[in-house]
Length: 309
Length: 222
Ligand code: SF4
Image (tube, helix red, strand yellow):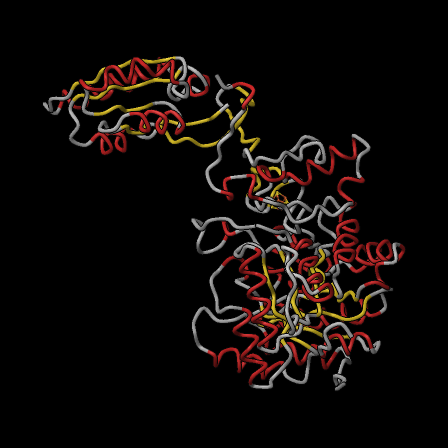
């Protein structure tokens, strides 16, 4: 065990893992976190708590994570973007997060702040996501800060994650980048939302051929579609997301009222198909502001009960 | 070269404020090439200001002079000599020129007429693009001659990030993804191993992050 988190235990036991996402509020209200956490409790092995996603200011991921730990609701995966903090702030936050009982960290570069609600902010990007993975691994395993100084007892024991967008172009480089993340020390990977299972499986095959599926646990991303409009938007505007035409048609044909249900049905089918893809060790369901729909999807996909280890 | 653009007239008028006798000081190097602060632009600004204040009956005097470079002592001498006779110098050099003059003029205000933007190249007539950040430790031999620190919006060293789409950066469809360009170029150069290796965390102290920089070449000193 590297960090002894529930997510690590589930994955290392060979169980098919389920994670979801929880978006913190644009306020200081802890109740929102508690309510959303309780919706997901028992349905997932861990919950990613986003870090100012899309560069819009929200409650800190670490603080929201500490709330769910303290209340004993669900295990958090804190997210850490390199957009807003330099190496001093990141390492300090990592020590604090570990002290608060957080055991998983997903390392991201983060969306550029020009599209968020503070576009006039100063850019940080002292590190990139791959360098962040390497830094956290060195803090955990080599017991050193980035500067080389030793970390006294207690070192932060984190299960380290990274993201993967296998179908963004240039596509040829995506497996190379995954390999770099794994070489840097990524224990687990959560992918961008997958709709095109065939293309995804091709990328997975390349990754597995390189031995990456043995060196890391890959969780395939699921983004439940709410409407045909959302599907078209994702298809057009989200890099590496390819929603097949027939899926968009299904949502259209379902009509306005039934589109959400159809989207959830598609999500369940995707989970079932992705389970069969070589190297996929779990799913990561991203249903921000639709958290209440996650339990139903998990249940219909036949992923209950979640293991208690 | 250093690329700059002239501030809007209203902003310049606000900056001039109450100063009455102002020397508009041009620079004949980078900012002349990018049509922001050379001799021609100095004369245009001088006549715009004379006209504007003249029309309003406000008594101000605008002198004009352009030197070859405002970043070298021998060239700025004429400005320093005139200083006693002035209320302010409105420099149309890049920020280097403004600082260089201000450092040498104890009691005379030196005002900027330009917004200095970047180190860039002329892509075509009227189009300039940023290419270098002056980071103090060049890595262009590893990235096919394309600078990720400057041309990647996140300055990441192990790109492209997940936001790259169709060769464009996530910030705008008008911005090329530097890492897409680097990938294509390394492929053409048969140097893809450069992108397969992890670029380690960088020491940014060679750049502005380490504080203002100074270079001393003992071999050149007199
Ligand atoms: S899309 Fe390309 S240029 Fe833009 S931030 Fe990502 S790697 Fe950098």
